[in-house]
Length: 188
Image 1 (cartoon, one colour):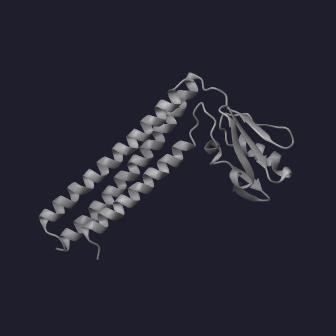
Image 2 (image 1 turned 60 degrees about the vertical axis):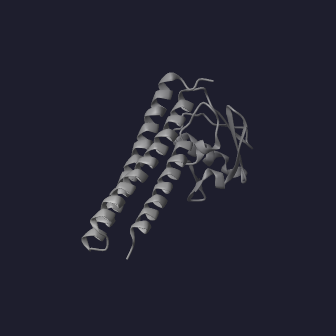
Image 3 (image 1 turned 90 degrees about the horizontal axis):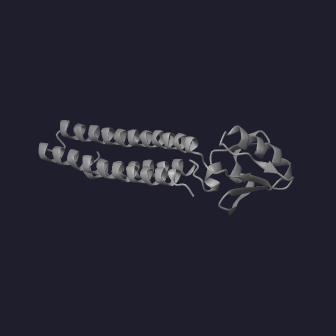
């Protein structure tokens, strides 16, 4: 049977994963600066198999406003370009037969607001995930109290600790989202 410490450790581990997933999700939201993470969710039809673009080509950011993609197999240029267009990233790839260049246009105010709205949606999804982890952990703690494995004081203390843990992760999540929002709204 699990103990309160094991429940807290499990909750902390799951909340760490939620925070790491938030960081990954935020990396795919475009700012005015070029980043190869912009292409993380792009899948290329590689001989019938949807494959991440970074597994069929070299990705580079030679300058702040440009991403270059050099496919390992030259016959994959058209499918990669098609996949990028289909991903609706707000970019316009161009190829010269060997390399695909993606100029990253500066963001206008309307697009910045759309990206901030998308960021808030992603952050809220992760807040819900952290709250669900807290709820699951509290249910485990209640079960321990109901089965008389812990006394009332330990039950109350465990719930307080779980709330403190949740609050600290919510603060980390909010800080990360604020930093990303500032980055999006920053005009270079």
